[in-house]
Image (cartoon, rainbow, N blue to C red; front, side, top):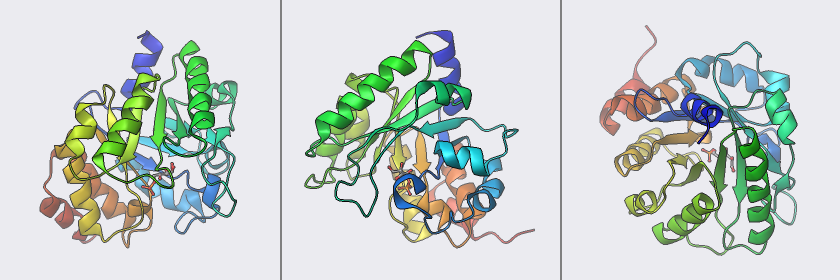
Length: 260
Ligand code: R5P
């Protein structure tokens, strides 16, 4: 692995403990003005002090984020379908590698749909992007979305994650499932979990804790943070689990803490 690739990976995954709190606010690329992100900058700015890496789209980065921020960017570079269209997540490349470099991305994110009708298109799209990104030392985070008829279980997540890693992804993002250690053990690159739909805060914190205990190196969480009743306290609580090994109970106290 070359110096640039290693350096970018260590911006995304903190070298002090090998973990990361990635804040995912890229939902607009297929969901439009997602609840909580209507004014993306107003939501994101107070969360930045507790964010190791910010994952978002090219447009959101340019239109809402101050270029002087000191938080590395993972840029969403796949897309092309919407939540109201007929082929959700049948994605292709939507940002060139040149623009990712121009935007100073520390990494890029590409979705693949293992097991779905269009798995071949999405997987070949990702591998082409990996070839281009590796030319410039930019890591690729594979987003393993769940195919329509696929079960959300450890067997499927292991299969999708391992395929992504074997095809060259540098980090894999997947969903937490029971027996998650099996997913992590069979995946040779670091694994982070998405949060998924909004859950009660206690449950989301428990899920983050279970994922870390099972070997995930962090979270790439969105709605469970920005749709929380208290997004700042929620990201602080997630941060405590990821970086301070807080228990779900301790993290919930962080979430409940009153402003001093
Ligand atoms: C989905 O593919 C998007 O990349 C989201 O960023 C991802 O789902 C993580 O967000 P959430 O925690 O809201 O699921």
